[in-house]
Length: 458
Image (cartoon, rainbow, N blue to C red):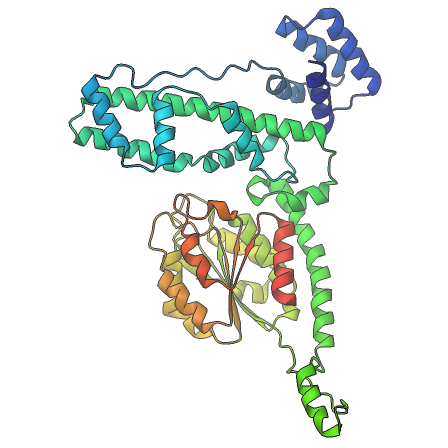
C-alpha cells in the first residue's frame, strides 16, 4: 500500500498538484495512524494531508478511484446456461463459421468470463512506451485497446451469429436473451479495458518525468489533440517549416553545379592515363512537383491540416503543389493557397468541408481525380496521399491508384495508423500498400515533419 500511495502522490504531482516532501511524509504518517481498512476514511486522510487548494480537489477525486479500487472485475452472466442440448449443438455449429480468434472471444462472452490479467497485460505491451499520455487520453487509449482486441470485428461476428441462429430456427426469445447477455458481457469487458487504460496512464505519470510542453505536443497523437493544443501546434509548424526550408535551400544551392558523377569522371580519365582531368557531373537536382490528396474526415482532419500547413510554408522550395481534399468527394483547394496565407487558407477549406459523420470514400475521390485532373500527373510528379486507408466498406478503386502510380514519378502514402491495424475493419491499406514506393507512419507532428523532411531531401 505504501508503494501505491507513493505512485498516487507522483501522479498528483504530474497532474500539476503541488505537494512537498514534508506534505508527503505527513500523508504517510496520517495513513499509518488512521489505517486503510475503511476506504472512505483512507480517502479523506489523503485528501486532507495532500490537497491545500480547492482547485486541486477535482484532480484528486479523478485519480483516487483509479489508484485505489477493488480488483474485482465487473459482473458478467453466463449467456448459454439455459440452452437445451440441441440448442447448444446449433450454437456450436453456428460458431464454426468464424476464425479461431473470434470463436474463442465469443465463447468466452457466452460463458460470462472476464478478461484475464494476462490479456490486459498484453494490451499494455502494445503501447508505445515513449508516447506522452495523461488522464484526458483515457477514452482514446481504451478505444485503441478495443481495436487491438478486434472489438469491431467481434461486434460484427456477434450480429452474424445471432442472424445465423435465427435462420437455423432458433427460438426468437432465446436469441434475444443471448443478444442481451452478450451485449452486457461486452460492456463489462469495455469497463475492464477502460480501467486498464487508466492504470496504464497513471503508471506512466507516476514513473516518468513530465516532458517540456512543446516536446510533449510534438509527440502527442493527432486523435488526442484538443483545440487549444492544435492552436499551439499551428505555431510549431511555422518553426519546423523554417528549419526545413533552410535545409532545402542549402541542398538546392549545392546542386546548382550538379553532383559529381564518379563513374563518368573515371571513364573520361582513361585517355589521360587514368588521371581525372575532366570532371563530369550528373544533371541538376530539380525542385519537386507535388500532388497531395488529403483525407479531412473527422479522424484525419488535424493530420491533413498540419501536412498542408507544412507544405505551403515551404512552397518557395517546391516547383508546384496541387492540393486536394476529400471526405466522400474530391475538392481542388490550390486556389485558396494562392491568394491567402496558409493558416487562413486552411481555415477557409475546413469551413467549406466542415467536420461531421460522413462516409469516407477514397475510391470515389480517386474516380473524381481520374475524370478531371489526371493530366497533372507526369514523370516529374510526386503523388502523396494522406489518410488512414479506411473506406467505410466502399469500393477502394485500387485499379485507379495503380494507374496513377504508373504515371507519377513516385507514390508516397502518409498514414497515422500502425501497420498491424492495416486490414482491420474497413481498412483497405493492405491493398494500397504494394503500389507505394514509400509509406510513412505519421501519428503526430514530429513524425509528420520527419516524413516531409525525408520526402523532399532525398
